[in-house]
Length: 268
Image (cartoon, rainbow, N blue to C red; front, side, top):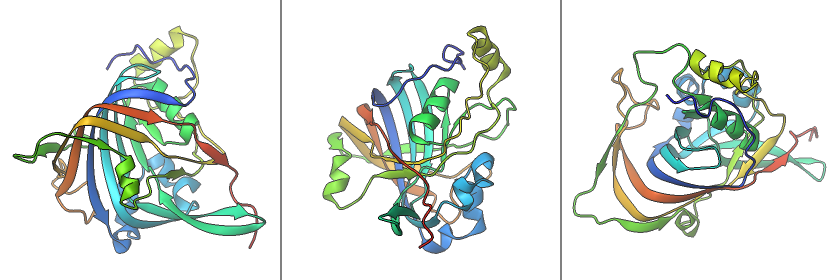
């Protein structure tokens, strides 16, 4: 992995990016979302044992997504990303002195290939980014998949705005993040220190935030994604091996400014 972006530099939203995007869509039932095995798969250890997972709302299941993104052009350079949105989560917000229940999508895992993106993702939108590969390598990949395009189906234009026309809400709401020690490789940390950067990329936040990403590609392919993992199981317990998927080539991907708010304090 390149150490060119090991040093952390602030790159506030909005971001206008170009990328190739693979997205697999599958269904998580309410019973799957409430099982202990769901938490093990959905969260990385840092967030799993923190209020991010334990006190920030109930997983409800529903339409879920695994997304793989190869960014070619961003404010912090090129990098790769893998993220999991395992359905909607119920949570509460303060409204006129009372608690109001809401339900939104949530990102519970993200892995990216540079420290700079990890820090900016966490501070710009409470996205629980981790740098990968970790300082302690593993023979088992964190995630593996294969995209198989549908035969005889041509590439077509597609925008995430189409989901809104179908009544699907793509707004993402993220709880406050815990801070953690760096998980970067020693080579990346050494490169960062050469630029006077000694802080951990695993920054924490103290507020909730929400945003709605935008994606458009003039050449989108429909297909299937194999979610079978190296250990023989599926990435999300109970999910099927094959999921409907799309590949969006040369995607216009925009990450807007997040809306931030304090955790609820009212007792009603």
